[in-house]
Image (cartoon, rainbow, N blue to C red; front, side, top):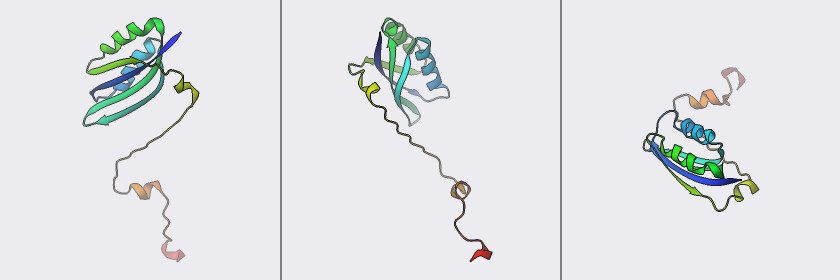
Length: 116
């Protein structure tokens, strides 16, 4: 039997932080169900819903507390079934603007000098 946990995590952003969080969850037979993550003012902020075997909750929460520079709070989710009933995907892409970005990404729609 497994339990759904909702984790909230915040800490100074650094390369490999999400990978480290995912490894701890995976090492304790956890399953990453859904998440929302942000980079705000140099901080990493994330909310993650996972499922974990009932007998591994204490070991997982202790391991999450051991991630240096990341504060993780876990709560047992009482509404575990709603995540499996419907699947909704949302993709947001953000890119930094730079000179020439549009002309390299899209073909020119202006006629060439000989095609007027």
